Length: 333
Image 1 (cartoon, one colour):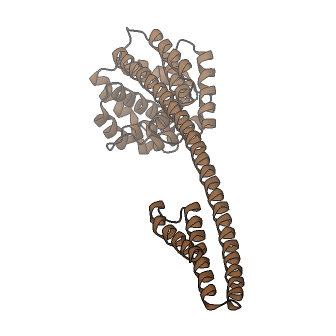
Image 2: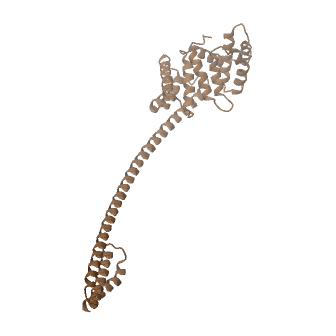
Image 3: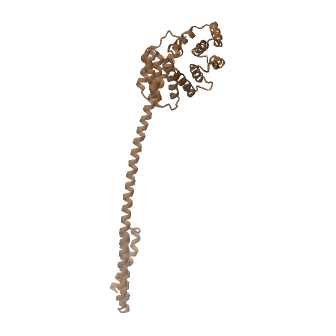
């Protein structure tokens, strides 16, 4: 097996696990506990777990991992196994834990292209799950994946991971193109071809759904902002109209108040003057004068009430007749 830092390590392990017989599997597990060569023991564990992972046998993967992984706590490559184990958690994938383990492995072997893809894939799955993943971290992972694609342009998995990251960054057309390229690069003669194709088809459907969801969300946001602006304009218009009406009503009230005060002052002055004049007249003439004054005052207040609409117009008929009658009586008397 190549060194752990080599990009060929994972490919060699995958090639070996595809050819393992049941007898070789048993022999391989025996090598794990051979303390004479710890790298060989770890390589045996890595190949064996790769076989169970390829076979989608999570129970056997978990049993073998729990039985032997503790022997290699000091090897950084074990973080890859820890990451896979987190993805196979019985309660559902532990994506944050898987991402942390993948990051540790990548920190130890930063030029290992399969580790770059693995870390980026787990990070993308974490983002797709709804967790907050900083855009800067996604951009950094995408940059590493693109460099891996440049080094190995025929690796379909790299293209698929690029598609996931691009979708999270809102670059949906680029994401779908990457998935389409991954589908084209897959070798139908390789084991697990159907599973990978189904996975890529699912990713493409998810990308399209995400793009459509974001378009709908953007449309709703624009509609909401437009409605808010229209509502604000309407409220402002209503507020201005109310303010104008209030100012008009206040002006009218001030005018009426001033008119009323002026009328009262004039009436008081008129009454005082009339009383003073009547005081110097004979009794009969004084009574006639006061009667005429009462009629005039009644008519004045009736007209005032009619002008300012203080009461209903037909209610003013009686005081108008009374005032006119008093005035005529005094005049004719």
